[in-house]
Image 1 (cartoon, rainbow, N blue to C red):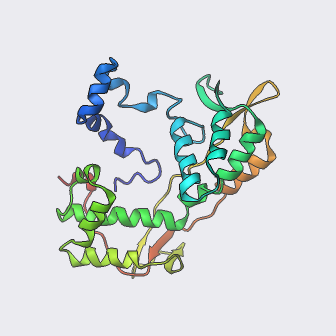
Image 2: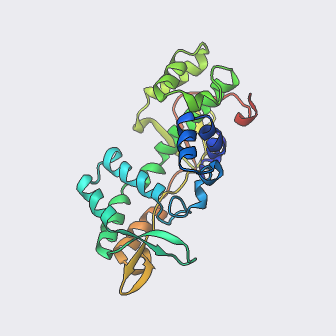
Image 3: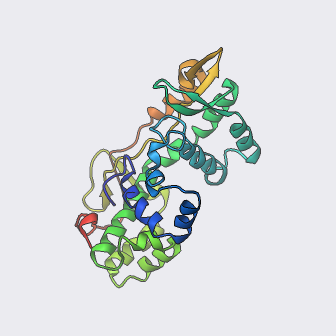
Length: 260
């Protein structure tokens, strides 16, 4: 919605506001004598967050949960093995980073999670995400939903608002979306103005962790042919410039952040 599909950080602008509006969180911060400025921007803590493809707590968590629930590439015992093999080492910039103790465990981790990475970048994923964003922008422009609602309501509530929307054009487009299949997705390097067609960049989510090997600290891609192959296969993944659903929908046009 904010035109930030490649980095996906713009929604963090509201983090401090959300924390301040939570009595429970503010009480806990006060109890522990922690200032809100010390937690509102977690980017200042490299163990919590850092740039792709480094390993951080944030990247570790969504990768493991995705592999457990989304694609089912491993189970709890695998997660336990990975967690128990992680330590903290200094990276090339002398900054603390989550790292692996054993090259074999790291290779297995990369080989497994590399099956996840395409799911977060493939044509169908980028298309669905952008279509829902365009539906939300259209709902917002027509004053059926506010930006604040997106932080307060559940996904079920949001979907109910779309399906019960008074605007037939929006409601019918969403119904067509629900009835679409992977086989009906338009993929091309040429746009199609007769259908809902978009061109959207995605965020390439992958990890190239540090690992301790032969008394040195190296990136797994630099010392493992298996990991290098898994990572390069993803980085060389081809996607289409234009993607779409085979029904007509033209989103209402206004900058989402400019709408009260």
